[in-house]
Image (cartoon, rainbow, N blue to C red; front, side, top):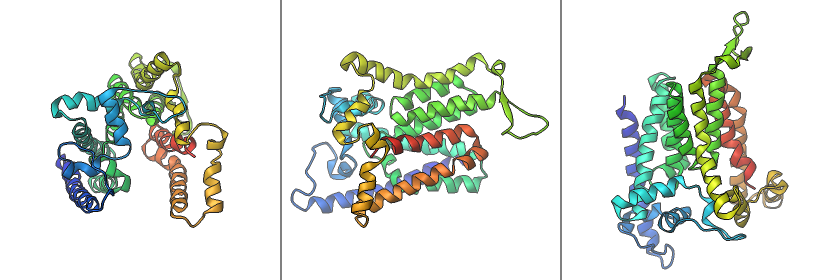
Amino acid sequence: MWWRPLVVYAGVLAVLLVLSWQVVQRVALRADALPPIGFPGEWFWGGWFRWDGGWYVGIADGGYGYTKGQQSSIAFFPGYPLSIRAVSHLTHNTVLAGIAITIACGTASFVAFHRWLRDRLEPRAALTALLCLALYPYAYYVYGAVYGDALFLLCALLAFLAFERDHMVLAGLAGAAATATRLVGVAVVVGLVVGVLERRRVVDPVAGSPWRARFELGRLRPGDAGVLLSIGGLAAWSAFLWRRWGDPLAFSTVQTAWGQGSGIVTWAKRDWIASVVRRPTELFTVGLVIQAALAALVLLCVPAIARRFGWRYGAYTALIVAIPAVGSQ
């Protein structure tokens, strides 16, 4: 069934490519509605390079910069722009390199996700879950957009696939690539560490319940330490920021320029509450409420996820939602 994820990805990609091309062509007919960017094939690929894509390409072309109090490129982790810089030697254009990386990683992530599903679910359920990923609205970002989502998704999946096959060093290296691509890669680190603890626990033979288990340090193996390599991407990025600008958390500090600074105002969701109270019927507010409800629903599902697939995936799911939920206004 290895071909199924390829067919699903290719089918959705083809539809989105045509739709994007048509939208760009129609919008571009309106004066100044869609300013040209200027790269080969823009007439077809133009819809996939907007917003944060400009930051990633700018980093790939010219490196990082930081001006305190202003929006700066250090807000974006280096995994994806470094990949763009490497592939651009083949494409001779950084925008096309970014699109190519997203499509390649998106395709590979579908194959990896299907492999992960087939290890745990019957074929029909695995296909259903694959279709849920393929048709999820924000999956748009793994079909060609110059964003790092597809690369992160692939790295996270490879980390857990390697872990399940007891390749701890490979799991740690894939996790390091994830933490070098997105801050939420911390969820991969925690998931892998929790997975090691799960593997080395001892279940009470009388009770027989996985909830009544104890962890014995002596059951750890030297190779288990390989999962700790997963923090390496974030550690290297922080070390670079510390040496260059004296702030190992500059990627977080700079968020204040986007109105997303850390602190009690953000954690307490003051602005979100104000929007709900003052402008409850605005489309933007309604969207925020829906997203908050979905985030809460996912967190409520964590115990069920842990019972079905293990606490490593429960911990990963909880953090992958909690990190942006807590850190954004």
